[in-house]
Image (cartoon, rainbow, N blue to C red; front, side, top):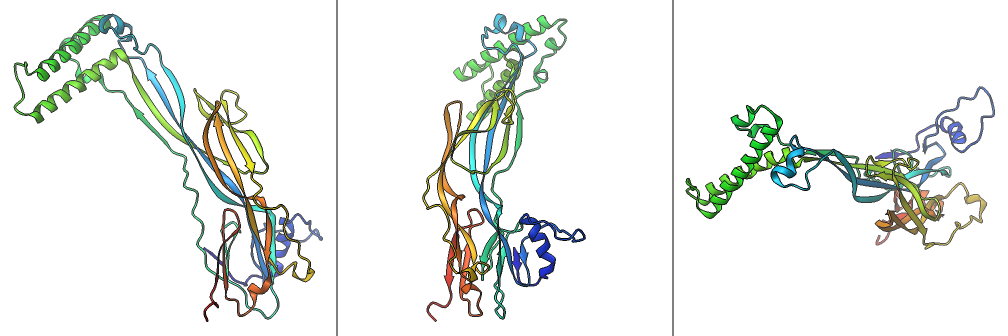
Length: 366
């Protein structure tokens, strides 16, 4: 947590503050430093947040591969669905969305403190968003969406199950014939075991289960040589989207059944759309400060407006959500009564929307 007290020198931060607010240097020899919110000897410099959306797209790639004996699958095993050539296809599994806060550089403020008053305890995020006044606040946890990539191969080493006769066969055709015959023998043995007609029956049910499992394993491995096998890969991409206006079907990315998620300008994929509707749950525009003496002695905070978000692909709605968005609302302010020596009001702000989360007055009941 960034616990900020009045401890920095005003002349150190102000030149960089002017740069951060877009004001040029007055003298060529002036040293310009990167602007960083914090505390000066005269006040607190902070950002209000804008609400950003972290969108995670999870998809699975399936690649099917033909087996070594795929040319004989129909003739020897009557398989009509054997893989004849390698094919890859991506498919969207799910979409998740969470909100997070980012510094709004258009809302950088400084609170100038009165002389002979105690400095308030202020908490800022590492990137300068106001978290609390007269109270301690923990750093916000990062949005729990991570880019992951896992893959699983369905291939089995079928040759581990070859008999000596199959291994010594002189041609691929002969190997296919002997392998097909072995598959039929396995099926016959399974049938005899389940009917209780095998020459060597297991002593108990557990032994029978193990024998059947072993036959299934052998058949699966040999069938891959005719039917083929599949590899799968599951991948999650995370996008960041900052709503600014009401939008109807804005393209945020594209999805290709051959390449997965691609950039929104890559026409190899079909567009993934986001629609944003500002519900206008709060009036636009902040309350103006009529007493000019208070302009530098207030703390601004956000009053967010509710908005609806919908993500769609190929005519299907993949996700629909409603949440408060800071930049769709307006700013309000708290007066400098928070900064007197007898301040008993503790305030916490949302790092995502910048609105007041909690107010606690410790003077109540005293």
